[in-house]
Length: 87
Image (cartoon, rainbow, N blue to C red; front, top):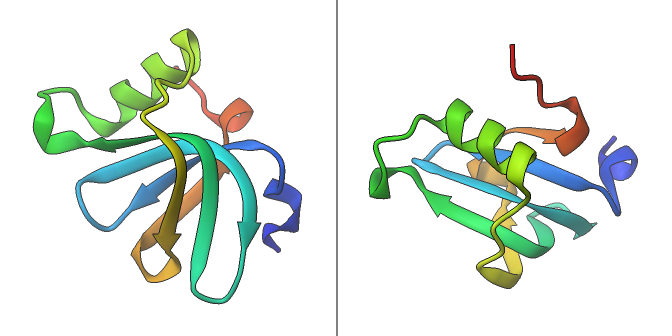
């Protein structure tokens, strides 16, 4: 099911107060691997998750990681960047 997201820029919403955006390059039963990713701790700003993601879509992903592995048990949702709506 995640195959349709491979090689696409994605937004990964997590159980924790983190959101991650980047290119999904690989996954297995335990991890998602994103490249050129922005791993953002929402506790560092007063911006909401939705606003941060919308601004990143509009201005581009603010890369702070070349590579990041995310445990799949931490994932609430994953979507392609182009599927993010700002309405």
